[in-house]
Image (cartoon, rainbow over all chains, first blue to last red):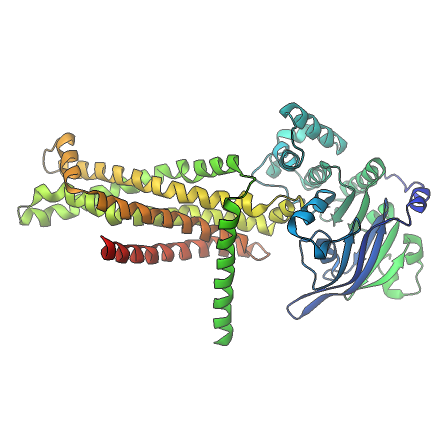
Length: 258
Length: 252
């Protein structure tokens, strides 16, 4: 059963003056197609921000700009107080290690087993790990996502839900402070979607991570969000809690909740 | 027309940057030794059966086809030397490189293309791992080293095929055949032909990686990347061969 959002308000209140992500006037175009037309947002430490919007509204591009996968045309992107648009690749990589990114289709490395998928990142960033310690770390993170038995499986042997969980395990293996989720429940059945939403909340509580969740799944948004933002035509159209936006005067905003 | 020219210059620029990045990354640590060895195994060892069969057939067919003409002039004894020279100088390098373009370049193009489409390359990048170094540098290095080895192997197998072909109509011992081959070839036959195979290998890897790495989003682009890698690599092999032959002619 889905865990109801417990009282994270007190924790959020304590940290509400500590933004770990700040985006100011972010613009991005692909040819003549202007995708982002001045996005402004900030996410506080320990907060779960859900971004909603129609397909092609620029949600995924926004979080890809945050990790430098897409280079913004204009604007400021501050992560941990560093403007990532003004740093070199080495500095950017130091920040990337502190950010986890769960891709829409999990993006598991097809040629590697689950163990190798998880160990691949860990071996490169945590020096001096013995094979035994590496194995323990991998097993621990797999147990956290409830898939310890899948350690020797290849990605092609996994179901959609399992791939998402393993993708999540790989994202969490470096214990990131920020986790960005790109449609974590897309393509999954209702029960698996609920399980994944529950897992996201568990992880957020356990690791005290700050999260941005891009989703179309309103059940996921309801259960995981501290705050919601709705993107329309490349700008933030509405912002507030789930309950506030559900009762919005704007019919277009309400249509997301119907 | 202007757009067409613009696209050509755009592509040339991208290829140049892609190739420059290889030379920048290849000498700087960390070195992906394990992945490099794995690629050498896949590219070199797994291509052996194909290269063995084609190499053997090349030698056999060349001997059988050349024998009647040489026999007319009573020059059958030149057959081992002629076959060896043809194989070492031209046929084995070009045919082996073309086979590698078909097998390896398309394989790399499809593999990297599908990794790009399924965001696996992006996943490496956000995990602060240099995907170019892990995927591209290792593959280009492996093809640059393995293709010349495969060509040398094809030379040997081709000459053995020639020996079998020769023995279909006459009776020559392997020792006599080998000594006739060795008498007819010099260092200058082997050296330029071997040097050009390093370029074949480099471009087979580089074109496969470039086409795969630059694949657009969508599964259709994976097929296009593989197909385009084979066509471009094959054409490049002929162009390099032509330049190599001209240079050899000029200097030796």
